[in-house]
Amino acid sequence: MPQTTKAIVIHAARDLRIEDVPIADIGAGEVRLRLATGGVCGSDLHYYNHGGFGAIRLREPMVLGHEVSAYVTELGLGVDGLQVGQLVAVSPSRPCGNCRYCAEGLQNQCLNMRFYGSAMPFPHIQGAFRQDLVAMASQCVPADGLTAGEAAMAEPLAVTLHATRRAGDILGKRVLVTGCGPIGALSILSARRAGAAEIVATDLSDFTLALAKTVGADRTINTAKDPEALAEYSANKGYFDVLFECSGAAPALSAGIMAMRPRGVIMQLGLGGDMSLPMMAITAKELDLRGSFRFHSEFATGVGLMQKGLIDVKPLITHTLPLDRAVEAFTVASDRAVAMKAQIAF
Ligand SMILES: [Zn+2]
Ligand SMILES: [Zn+2]
Image (cartoon, rainbow, N blue to C red):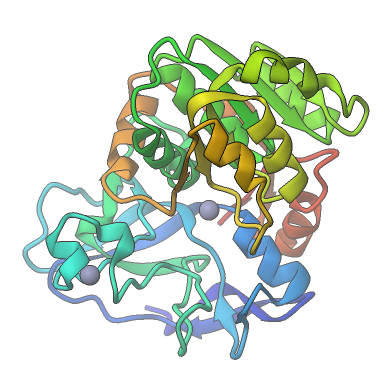
């Protein structure tokens, strides 16, 4: 067997290399995987375009990637429930299982989280964009019946299912989604699955808004072309019950808050750094402002929903490029006029 495998390694902003990295040993409870597909995520793009985000900076080379599907090639000791050759969605979430938050079932808040491809801790947590990957069997959810591309959407889908869970009862509610990148578009799918009666989506790109409509938005608004369109929802103290704020941009959040009806719920998913807030409106309309970060059990839930045909993510996969064109995949994924989700075929 070869001793190295190809990986996508970020060295600094705009310095992305396909390199040979050492193959890992397989231990008990682990599986060896041959990567099938990897999706380029907004956080990967931050590392690629800016070398990090906010206070989180790259301080050493890091294998990128956390949205992956793979084929099982070898089972470690004591692994059952998986088969060699099987397609699996690989959860990048690796909580410790021992800290106080893991004990409370809040694995996404784990104190010792080793989430793939994260420069938050140092040494950085290496990611999953590598042809040969050893993972814990518990990270692998069988994805029989799905394409490798769909299975690689399980991670961002799980992010939005977690937010949908945090939002509480959505049945019959009016939902506003601000920011229609992959997370916004998947929020539309998740909110609709949870029973939303009406979904309005905003963005600055006609391309992403067209896809938002394809996946179920009732109305889309381009706030660059039509900055006043949301204002009509602000009459009589507002219209929407739930806001999925997926842009991380303060103007989108502010405009969204003005369109919320009293006692509505604001789900903040976009990671835009510190934003200023119209606090008076939040107070006077008694709005709930809730964060949402990553996921845990929702990963397997999302795979199941896709397998049953209850959520269809396929329209959102706009680009699939081979590994040797990985840099191009990052460039195209950064262009919101032409790309929703760009994936790399390993
Ligand atoms: Zn992601
Ligand atoms: Zn933990």
